[in-house]
Length: 217
Image (cartoon, rainbow, N blue to C red; front, side, top):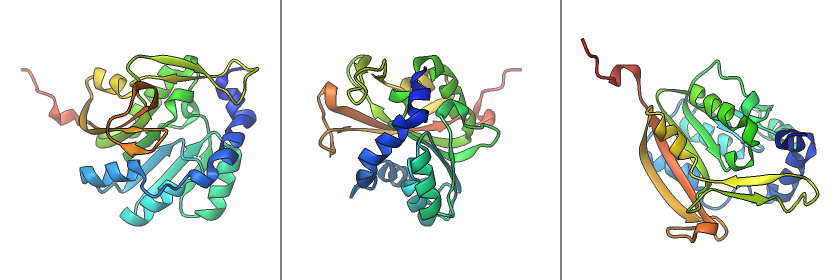
């Protein structure tokens, strides 16, 4: 069974139960990033949205149309009841439909869970959702070097977290430019310097539009 299937078949719900009381911190660094870079998105999608509480905040703030996807059935069910104006659905990241584009795409602390066999497909899905000129906000662990760590909640399963600089992929393909970035201590939720094992990073990336290319004749 793949790591994605393990989470879709129950562990995603267990994560939600353990963490639902902590889903709305006093200061949400994703929302802080969006406000700091000065965008006013009208269409927003969050990949790994849990119950959609962040999307509801952004919907009210920007009068935006909001979509959210999460692997946890319980999170989506709870969010659909609590936030009826947010469009929510249960899907793993690589299953999210990419036939529409958005002004703002959020993927916060999701990619380190993704099965490595689905990572490239997940990256392609994320890119397809960002419109030209739109913004991608990525948050995840960012240690000094790539790390693989056993998931302690399922000690008898081959489930791991994979920690690395995921924003580097999008910058490397040449379509994205870094707008802003900040680091924080994931364990203590403190902005600024953090040792490698505790370091989180939030990055805002702007996707180029087609007319920004130089045309050679």
